Length: 105
Image (cartoon, rainbow, N blue to C red):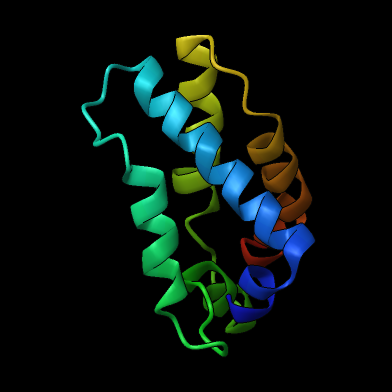
């Protein structure tokens, strides 16, 4: 996660994707603190530069991941709430081929 977090263009993508997730939560009347996004980003700052996501580790090890349960769910919940999630849709569609390969599809 370090390279994504530390490179300004991908950090902006991370922040924007998280903002979409926050908007989806608000669209479903989820009660989150106003500083939720900033708190999440502060938590990510505590990760060591070499930290990886569970999704990355799953694919590296040849296993299916939680892509659909996480990013796919954000997209579906956004559609249900009428909240656009273009960046999360892009991320999902960019990663789905990795998931299909891991699932033997």
